[in-house]
Image (cartoon, rainbow, N blue to C red):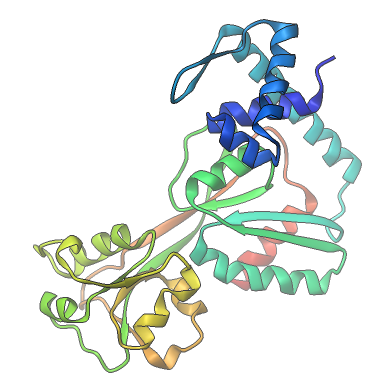
Length: 291
C-alpha cells in the first residue's frame, strides 16, 4: 500500500522541483523526503531522473503523479460530502497578494465575529505561491493579478483594481522632472506598476529606471509610510492606499483629463475538480457586498 505521506511528498517535490524546498514546505528533513521517494521507487520502479538543477519524471513518475492527483481529488470530495452544506463552522483558507489582502483580511475577521465557528486563515503571497497553494489544496481560495493557465484551476475574473500615483500632501506633479526631484519609493511590484502607469501619464518618458530611488520596502502596508514623510512617491494599487491610515499625509495625483485609469484585473482561483464549500461560497458573497 502506498502511504499518503509518500504521495504528498512526491506531489510537492514535482511541484517545487527541489528536494530542499520540498523538505522546507512539508516541515521534513531532506533525508525524509529522499526516503519517501525511495519507498515509492522500491515499489514502482524509477520515478525521477535527477539533474543538477531540476528533476525529470519518467513515464512511471507521470503515472504516479496522475494517481496522486486523483487520490487528492477523491479525498477532497469525501471531505466536502462529510462536511455537508455547513457555512458557519470550519476553516476559511484564502491566499492573496498584498494590496487586496489588506482590504480583505479585516472583512474576513468581521465575518468571523458574526460566525465564531469559522476559523480564518489568510496568507499574503506572490502569484506563483498563490497558484501552488491552491493546486496543492493548502488553500481553497486564491486571488492573483496574473491569470494562470492550468487545467486543474478554475479561474474567474473577481475584481478590478486601479493603480494610483501617490505623493506627499502638498506636492504638485506637473512633469517628469517633479518625479525626479521626489525620488521613487520601490516595492516588489513597484517597477512594473510604475512603468505601466507612468508610461500613460508621461508619454515618451526615459523610463522608471532613470528615476532616483529614495527607498524601498517589501511590506505592502508600509510602502506609503516614507511617502507620508515626504521622502518620495510611489505607485500602488488603490486598496493599498485605502488601507494606509495617515490619509492626510498623502495625495493621489489624478490622471489628466481625458486619460483612462491603469487597472489590474484580480483573478479568483479554485480547484476545478470539485465544487466550493458552503463556507467559501459565503465568503465570496460577503466580500463582494462589503468591498
